[in-house]
View 1 (cartoon, rainbow, N blue to C red):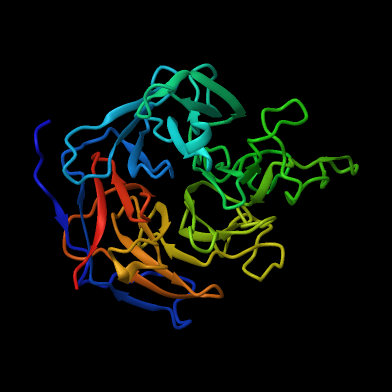
View 2 (cartoon, one colour; view 1 turned 45 degrees about the horizontal axis):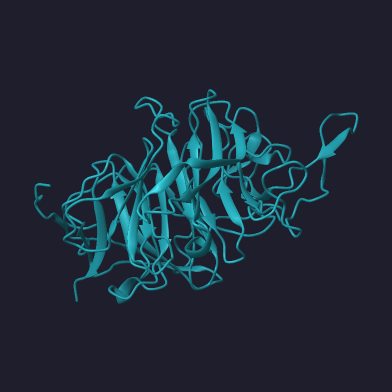
Length: 406
């Protein structure tokens, strides 16, 4: 493969004002001496949407492309070519004019080294606007190849529209699989899914994929928060059961979510509607307000800016004067950039700005600008390698990583 020119982006030296409801509450805003540089500069991908690792000690890097191809390669900056780990492009739907569908999620089982299982979330070609969570198994003969015939469907979620599919899947420290689902799409949440416990949409799910129950290919963890919860469905007081898969609700379109490998906290960037982008720390049973609120602000007629004990405010928000589509990232736990350790690195897809958010567990104390002099790019996603180093991807197909400028 022809070697490509190295591109380095300087990410220090300029403070970008973030318009936030936290402004004035002693939230520090400054720039960090941190840059981003091309990683694996010989490789170009087609809409790389997930960067991850197998957790098996092999130090391989895996990249999922939105059109349905998974690539694998050694964690070597001079690697010349990636191998196709799995190709499901014929099973997966992606259209440039409906670009929130496709292969959206990819996660390895915590015991992948022993069982060879990994999971995908994608828009299936066998039904219109339908998301599936499925399991595959690695080939018995080649660790760099998955067995395409091994697919087992775990869950199927009809979507009313093509947008707001969410799609991140991730295993928590408890061993359960978490699934981020958008509100089903269109605009303004026309079906009210964000506050509806009888639908899986507008929520983060938590399921046990190592067990089966009630005729499903998964089981419900016994401590899921809405087991046995009754929902009133009409004015006569008729009730039905809440979906027991739901872990948290009130979300518009989580893009993306990740567990902090040290604390186990689940961080999520939720894309806004009219004015505000937000970052949440997801807790069991939490209601994050959509579509009563957009971030901390009134949205629908029965919403207001007064505090509500039932709704959890984001730990950070920014106005559309700053950016218009958050790309949620990861809490950095690597070793090569000490300035980022413990901070949540995220971006805005539209403006190409990058930041590092610092939260002390009680409140957000700082939001550091990482974008300074240099090119601003549409950041699609973030991911980590086995060493905890954080990468981000762009629609141009490149992978980037961070480095200290000290």
